[in-house]
Length: 209
Ligand SMILES: Cc1cc2nc3c(=O)[nH]c(=O)nc-3n(C[C@H](O)[C@H](O)[C@H](O)COP(=O)(O)O)c2cc1C
Image 1 (tube, rainbow, N blue to C red):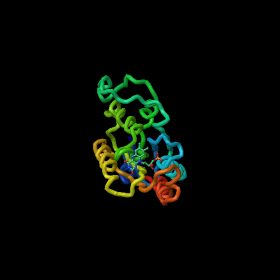
Image 2 (image 1 turned 90 degrees about the horizontal axis):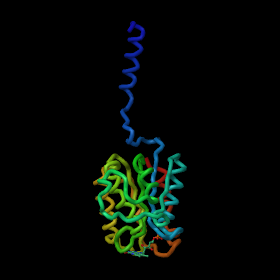
Image 3 (image 1 turned 90 degrees about the vertical axis):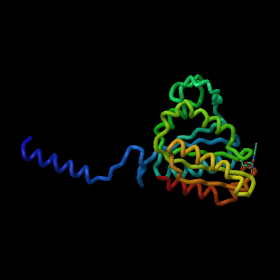
Image 4 (image 1 turned 180 degrees about the horizontal axis):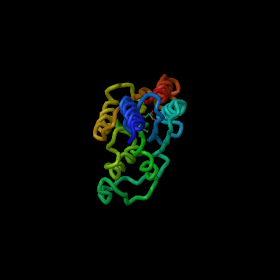
């Protein structure tokens, strides 16, 4: 290498070293992220879907790429624990979970939007989460997560089982909580529109990252 090329190469190396180290999955302010929203309500215009709509609106306005999977309107067979996937392989069921499989692995953010059903997430959403089993080996990587949950009661303590389940799940997967909207006191379809929660969901989507 001649002297000129040596100096050029040295300067280039120094410039690279001066740049902040950003891993592929690390989110930095301004980075356009891939977001997967998993919804669990069978009520199309229901309260948790309204929160999801608002979150998505904000996230898209900030330039993020959003994919949405409506579990209650999809065909997802419950996991039967056959273990054919070995926790990291093809599932015996070829159904709409394929969409989740294709979009979750490289998602930067995963959003869980669900109504409270008897102090847990809806069965439709839990069905999807249980099918994570077949891709368990691929989703243990840094991601952010968001919880959007609606329920009729106004007791904060009754939201604890879902919050605890969500936190335990994301801790296990190595994901980081990026925000929660816990919308209490909303029962009929549209009730959430009379509250500040949709705006909060919009702001959360807008500022995610
Ligand atoms: C099967 C079922 C179980 C429910 N369980 C609870 C519950 O345990 N606690 C509660 O506060 N509300 C409960 N609710 C009310 C819903 O959580 C509430 O209406 C929520 O806003 C519905 O969200 P969605 O409109 O997104 O479907 C239940 C509703 C249904 C249909």
